[in-house]
Length: 140
Image (tube, rainbow, N blue to C red; front, side):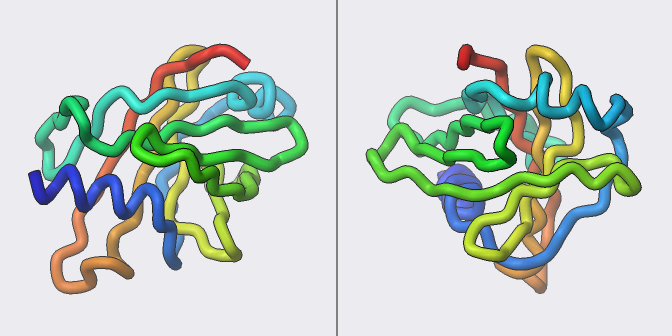
């Protein structure tokens, strides 16, 4: 249960650091076409363990726009967090920035699935772990 709460907090409160995974291998002009829609959280992977949605647990959802802005919402409160996204063609990932800070990157993008990597080094420097969050495409 603590891991689910931690996952939710990390996703909602982005801090510093960047991830440098390389796996988006599509032309730059196709990124917005695939990315710009609503994405609903599906499941997470932490320490090699798949963590599915639990009833009542916080769930982050994204809506990406072609103007390179996005909104992050949660199913547990009505507040919307706004941020920006940028595609780094050299690193082949999409960086998400909120309040000038970025610790979440989109590392895989397909028509119906998006994978994010959350960098936890700033939150847990003594025991950083990779958290991969998978999203399913919704409608715009």
